[in-house]
Image (cartoon, rainbow, N blue to C red):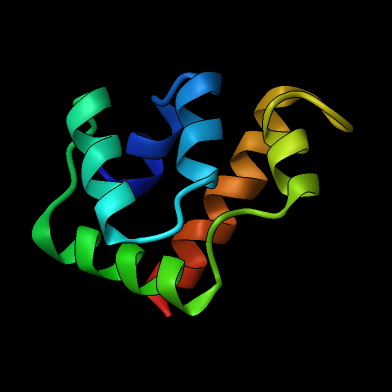
Length: 89
């Protein structure tokens, strides 16, 4: 399963919690709580993004992903694509 597919499978509540992550410990707790699985490489990349300030998503991006603005699917896709683009470098 690609990272994009993994993010797309999150519930709105899980996406909100993910967007609020502040550090690697928070990511670990999120993964344990939700059962969301990442490879070690994906986990390291996301932790680096969280610590560098490139994640969490902005309030606007989170609102769009949750259904504001365009259709929820379009906004989720935009938010996921942004996260994947950042991770991919």
